[in-house]
Length: 415
View 1 (cartoon, rainbow, N blue to C red):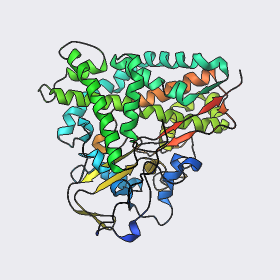
View 2 (cartoon, rainbow, N blue to C red):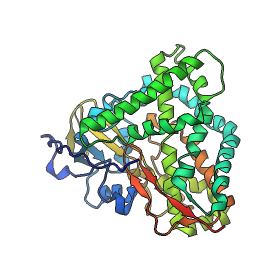
View 3 (spheres, helix red, strand yellow):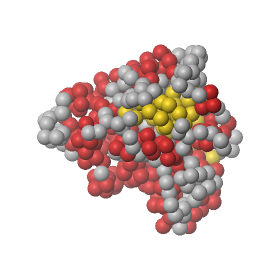
View 4 (cartoon, rainbow, N blue to C red):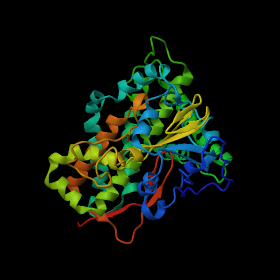
């Protein structure tokens, strides 16, 4: 994948209701400093002393950004005023996307969410843990004796995808082109707003077109796979429409094939540069469960939006109906008002506050699967590769977007 560059189109004009003191120049797809300092450091700049809790950027059509954990949580929890009807930026692209459940507001959203939760709850994950562990072991064993791997390509880019494709009973060979679609939905390419909209919407349609015949083939037939269990479930006692089924499965594909993939690479890069943390986990395995939650807090990677349903005031400024507000999840876990010394990773942290899986009614349904995949990865990796580092002279490539990514993560270890 190519690195996303800032759109060449003119910056959006500043609306009359936006105070000059609230304007910042930050592109969610290419924040300043990301190449040199990394994704999280680039976003953390929005919490510099004196920065308001709500700022406005002229990038990507112009939109607000919540910069503090408390306000991000407030917006997530208030679907009446901050709707999920449009969640992707730029707005011209997001208003044409269709992922059903994630773009619904309560109470409509609630019944559909229960359908998804049934297939991804803790009990369901316990039933498939052995299967997930087998996938991790198989991949690590492939390169363990080589002393080196491109982690982002040879493990992170394969493990969660293999897990999801198995849970959904989809052909593994379909994963490669599906990954291309998910990439363009979460990190649309283009030099203008229109080109970015075309990139996002074409990828969106590609996923929907793939899902539709799968739904047709499994509808009305018993099956234990995630897709069959989802589409053959009634919502409020009613059969779902074909469009609703397709949207639900498309959403599952998008989450299963992209988000955890990238989270794994971020935390393994950190461990590869900080051997003392690896030593803590190998010498004190009891820390592992706690470490998963702390890693989730420290390395969030989702930035999603909400649209204003009416004029209102927040943080001392007026927001207008139709305005978009971006909610960067890294700015919750890394907020000093949420966690003491948030930049420091502490496996024994007593109180962990984050919104890595979102917050409120749209909190990610796949959080139990994500936690399990992280836990299994750490356990099986450290059993086989207890010492490793980022290979000297190599440089991971960071991508920002709706879901952030890191590529070219080369790890090495003694054999």
